[in-house]
Figure 1 (cartoon, rainbow, N blue to C red):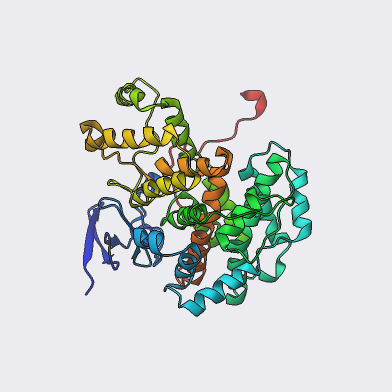
Figure 2 (figure 1 turned 45 degrees about the vertical axis):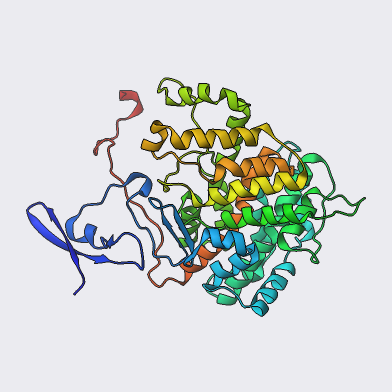
Length: 427
């Protein structure tokens, strides 16, 4: 018999089964709670609620562990490729050489956008934020690709998944090109997924574009580190939108809209701006003291995480990647030296140690992206590009779940009780 938990309410006892996952916290199954007791649970932010069952990504925040289908993120980032990780998330296992080649070729065949869709860009203002463009263009995909919007058909789901992963770099690069007034670059499918994106972003028709291997590898690693991160705000948004039966393009557009928030996808931009404000290592002690002052609005960005209470495993890879990029581009940046020194000081300062404020992935990613040449407005766009594969995998998993229901959170109502309408003349 399954282990049970007991709840006492109104003089009655109720038993609820405890479900054990393959790893991680046990889950109390309260699906019958309201029906049996007439009570809801109260969990703002869903910090203690498992809203779904998933076999994709596991995080142990206390230990600083991030696994995709069981594989540690550090191993994947160091030894794998984004296409291989994409295959892993979608299919559950690492591909053979032949499977990876076929998958990469399939993605390459879907990289172009419908030409009429390209004309959408001219409808936006030149100074439009690239994330605003991404929301609009991705949502519009469903108006062009009707042959893959039947969510009940596994073939449709597969095609739409491949299309989203393949077209996101083209959409993102075009958003950048439009903002700087340069002509769009069409995909070159002789290049890798990441190399193709770099060329579409920074290449121009008048010249051949040479992909620098170290930069390509760094970008691929950044994509891997952002591919999926369990049930965060944007992923939960994709699942909630998908639970209504909405088409996959609309669901991913919803995820992009959620990711746009500065508390979610905009954190790396905030961290880079903070490092630029500090400027040089000798100014760090002053800003450390400001961060400790409750009356000072200054906060150390890029430290701490909603889930991780240990060193973010992705930050370790990022720190190494910054050095590789700087060496390849033969540049030095005081911001990076400031970041290294700030990290060193914070990791040994009792205030930050006690509060478990360790560097997270955003602390270093902004430095890398800026060095490569991306403006800060593109940072969240790159996050969305990489996270699309995670969103798509989560959406597919949800649609295939026989226990899936339309999302319908409940509330603790604190408004007025029932009262009679008063005619306007008597108010």
